[in-house]
Image (cartoon, rainbow, N blue to C red; front, side):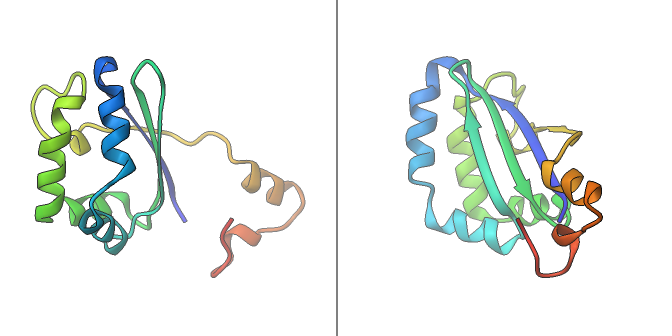
Amino acid sequence: MPRYCLVGQVRPDRLDEYRRRHAQVWPELLTALKEAGWRHYTLFLGDDGLLVGYVEADDLAAAQAAVAATEVNDRWQRQMSDLFSGLDGGAPDRHWRLLDEVFDLDDQFDAANGTAARNEPGKER
């Protein structure tokens, strides 16, 4: 399963509001993300506004496009846009910076021990 790390920047003066909104994400948006193929989607927020997201998806571009096509995502992105720094217009979910994966403990452990349990169909972490 391909894994992705996404980075963004929340305005430091809006961190509490960002946290509050993400404590109660709309059920329709949660459903749209799941139906689009987003798995293990997690967000981490630093005190300086650094936002790090982790997601697994068969095809991130396709998963992003499927969610972007929904009305609920359009409403969510418009509501969230004022909380982000450096957007220069547009929706926050179109301004993620994608990072390259350089290490995964399970992958290297499996490789070092001659196993590939994580990559077998039906077996996840």
